[in-house]
Length: 284
Image 1 (cartoon, rainbow, N blue to C red):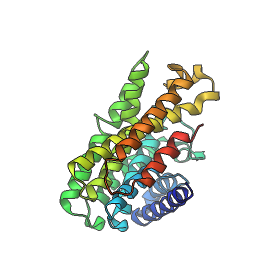
Image 2: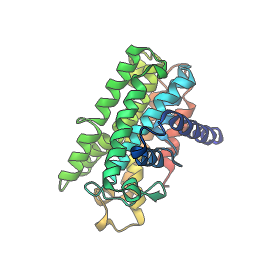
Image 3: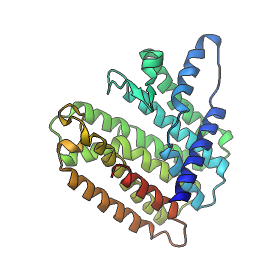
Image 4: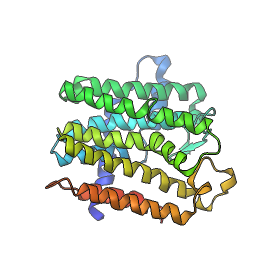
């Protein structure tokens, strides 16, 4: 696992550098606070799991690292947008994010909304532009994949279900997890495979692996509340399932995901195995 942790840290730093280079520093004097809010949120001490997954999937096909880092940076901009908006008072009303005040607490609610909007739109500008140096057909496929993941049939749809539904079953909540969290994780992996011209069979393997990884990610995240007051928690599997059952399902998903990766004949899958082991074991 030492190599995995080393690569995880190195790629996170590389993505932060890429974001720093890609983001504009100013547009007009009166808008400087917007760029400050964007950088405050987007360049941070996070693991950049989605970007890492994209880069390492692309690495399997020997995709140029400069190309994959640009798309990974765009993916992380989109993820940051979702976090900024998720923290807003109208959503989860979070005061802290990544160890510091959330964007709207630091810069105000209006600037939080605008910073999230700006990151979302700028991410697609990066993907669509020539600076990514990717075949235009591949860019379109990547954009299609990401927009599906974050739109009404993905992240946004999941958020709507989350804030409007009552008395959800464990299966209902897992579906919300797949949409809110898993869809963008899956799209990140698939985007790396698209860049590598993966075959349809290979694409299916990556999609199934990342789908399981995304669900594991959120199920493990729910375990954070193990020692918290369950009555005051947001929608959480801990309110619907015994902890031991959640852990058993995580292990089952992990085994199935790793088994599926073995269908990628002659490809180096060790880093992807390391990633799912890391995610699954975080809260043990």
